[in-house]
Length: 215
Image (cartoon, rainbow, N blue to C red; front, side, top):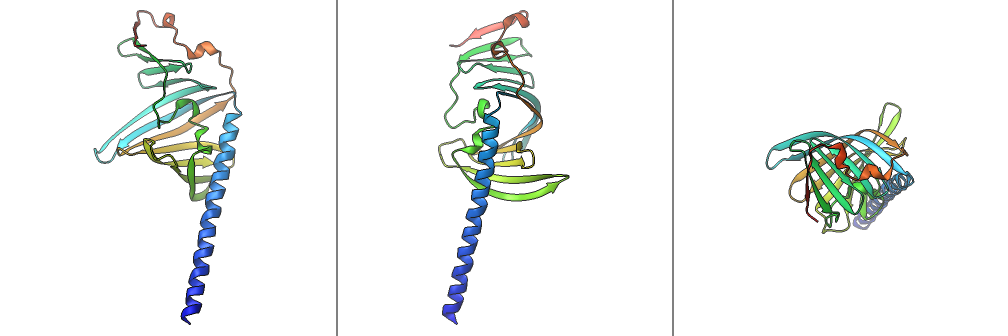
């Protein structure tokens, strides 16, 4: 009897492990497809709500923003700031003081790059499906992604995916310092035509702007 119980337990563990592996493979395949789909876009415009909270400090801040992406260039308009990058130079403009700071663009190691915010999910993660459910006519999948590179500033992502349309609807970034950053996409339009000059700061459009060149 003891041997039979051990055999049954062993089989249960085997099937459970294989079911978990199947879920992980399905999640990885889904995110890989979505990442590849976004990479095929020549550009994307997205409106979003950005929330940052720290439960330890009991603080929360919410902002509405818009991002334009073309290749590895981006323009981010959020709160009173306009951040423009052509992948070589980054301009950070403050509307409050009419001032722009100019820096060489060098993304911090382990940070999420704004130019690949929609495509990073297909690489460097361990995947787990948390939940799948219908919302209207659409099938939503909730996933947890853990970075393989433990040097990154964040230790996991929670991603909400519209499986029907294969789009990312929201991403929660859990940082090691206790902060949680949530990006909820309210609208996204791919393949709009943006001229390259859209990703270079034009001081003529900001009369009297103070330019602080830190390069």
